[in-house]
Length: 104
Image 1 (tube, rainbow, N blue to C red):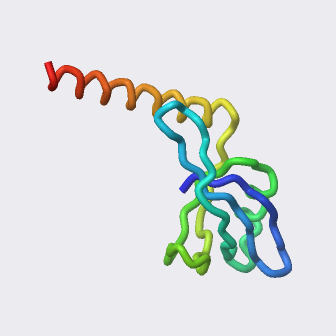
Image 2 (spheres, rainbow, N blue to C red):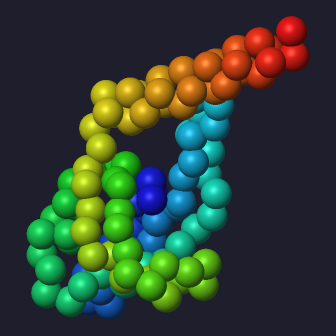
């Protein structure tokens, strides 16, 4: 899932994040705030979260009730985030063109 890091509490092994989505216009849309656990002793995840503003995270036991644990993370640069936005715009444009052709 794509998230923006809000804060990290190393002593509690918690990260507060904003779950994000990219709409068909390429806008990054906040969905909801989450408080996720970080695997205790996993300094690599903590370091990556601290160094990044936008991250793709993988969790175990994801649910909407904030009791998930981050097991892996991939940092996104601004350029990579912009590439993802472009992909969404392109996909929406292709889908709209396809729908238009079906109606003709």
